[in-house]
Amino acid sequence: MRTVWTRRLAVAAALGLGASPAAAQNGAESVDVHIPYTQFTLANGLNVLVHEDHSVPMVSVNVWYHVGSKNERPGRTGFAHLFEHIMFEGSGHVAEGDFDNFLEAAGGVNNGSTTQDRTNYWENIPSNALALALWLEADRMGWLLDAMSPSKLDIQRDVVKNERRQSYENRPYGLAFPTLSETLYPPDHPYHWPVIGSQEDLSAATLEDVSDFFRTYYAPNNASLAIAGDVSVDEVRELVERYFAEIPSGPPVPPVEAPDPTLPEDRVVVLEDDVRLPRLYLAWHSPAMFAEGDAEMDLLATILAGGKSSRLHRRLVLDEQIAQDVAAFQNGGEIASSFIVIVTGKPDTDLDTLEAAVLEELRALVDEGVREAEMERAVNQFESGFVQALERVGGFGGKADRLNQYYFFTGDPGYVREDLARYQHATAASVAEQARRWLLDAHRVRLSVVPKGRTELAAGREEER
Image (cartoon, rainbow, N blue to C red; front, side, top):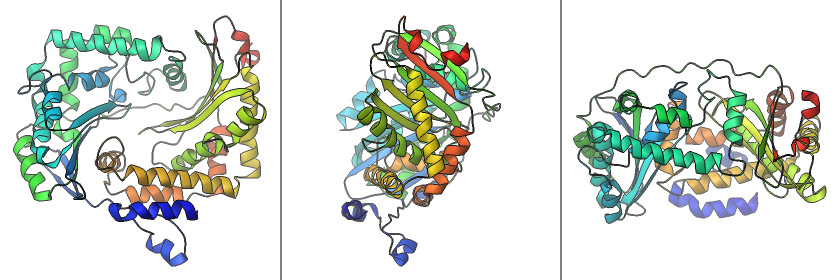
């Protein structure tokens, strides 16, 4: 670990990082992290988190709303992602197009994203433009519906429907992930439908439907505002009170009910697509984000497919040369997760052969254990990426975003130290045990995407018959 540790020390001073007391006492080369913050809550329920970082004259404003596609219902899907678009198209005191214009004129950038569990928006700006960013965020939180109209809804509805066509329906392998969600989760589970929704639901949405959705979920009592950078707590408190305090709280957010998604048996799905190479997707249920075993599943993904020295890449791509590429990841969610392995075969490769090899490697890992070098490499890779992300105050994964993430998922904005410790304290035995529990001892979805007319290449077809 010497090379990685030495390089990390170069950024430690800027981040307030160092070896943990326990690690230093034991002579271990381990990274300790901390994001100092101040937290307060407005009378309307808005949670506010402030991290001071005066290294550069920049600040990030980051808002998380506790709403994603899981808060929708069958027949009315895609609303959370639709609002990700609408929120940039003007509000009560901001004309259409001016949100971006004002920020760009001040030297800022902004973005947003939607998942099954949350929607977030952020602005990275010079610190002297903090008031502008807060005013813009407050205006769309409190006065977005003042600028809503049937024509605006129709325009953004068409944008999202076209995005769905480009990203899913007309893209090679594009329907794989919506199909996995539909197969892993029953129809009444909130993870069953894709974040982008269906074309039919988007077409059927009325102005009243989407306005009611906004009133319920985009209120200060369902939001968290994190501000990180060259600011003072007193300055932030004064500005947040000025712009957000008069926004009224919304109604209580309806609870999300999720039935047990456990698969009673393996499920085999085949999609024919306009592709040249057959591709195999294996998907299992796995621990929810930050739950016991979640960190081990992250490390398992690296051991299996993280780089050229990983087990599956070495065997399938380098040695046997029957696969074009391989990937694995823990797809974490608030109420459930999935562990996914993706293998793209060479032309005419039978996907049963690829599946058999994946399962053989999993059994070998569980039966023989994770090798020390594999474990060290996986933890090193995670630590390195973790620390590098915290070099930034803003953007996706920066310190403002991380404070909101921890508050959202754990209730503790300062969970960063505990988060990293989950990976540092994982062992070869704990990784193997989680692989056995969640993968080998459980049922899976086996999705094959094959060239049109080549269903004989699909995995599990013999068992299905």
